[in-house]
Image (cartoon, rainbow, N blue to C red; front, side, top):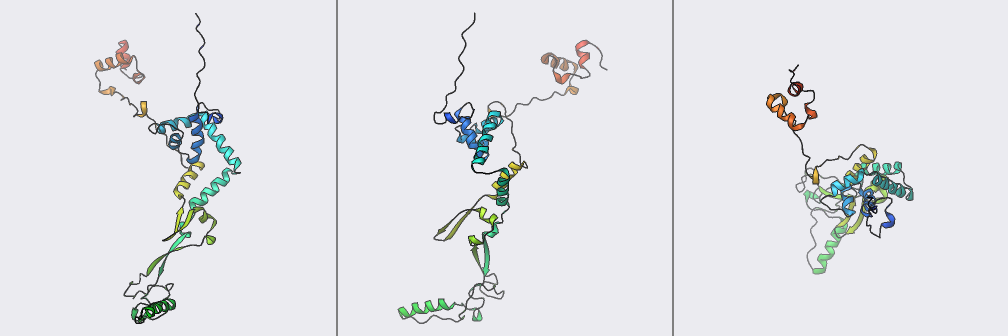
Length: 281
């Protein structure tokens, strides 16, 4: 009796992405193919695609092994590159310049002289404007004029004086930000953002190590390490190889009986003797 033909199994998909499956079986696989090119991290891509965090690592690795998923990823990356008129040469060039940029171009630490380095008898020294403002303030309240025992003419750009009893020749450190118009093309790639704050200018830079890692993966210098797991994501069960040389004949017969002629025993000098009754060679 011939049974009824079973209907082909259908897979439920999210209607929001049903038109974007790109030849894949499920909406999660399609989402993974969209997410993976963002950071090339299979685990994070699997999580963003909706898979469980507990199994994201193994799921991500499995998805990358599926030819249809890899093909979908490559199609998306090629389409994005075409849309942006980007080719591999440009990507490698940009990543290389970012990874090799010298962050010292963005800012530097300068050492200024302190106010006592060039003051008379190493006393505190003013600039002309500073003393004028201090004099005006004291006159408003009827206070005596400020002392200028160290003299006028302070210039922090002069080098520190080693014999200075105040800074001991170490001077005063000052962080200087390079004007953006003076930065090289490579250095500008380091800049992620700049904004003025109450304490000065806040600068955020791109991660050069991450750029170098991506560059290494693109060029094949860095390859992802694949890890194998056992059932349920646990460790792989290992089978110990018996130490045949230390076994007695009775123990070997028992091993043969239980294994039914295990491949590990083939070619052993005592196998023929134990199974066919012939003496070992």
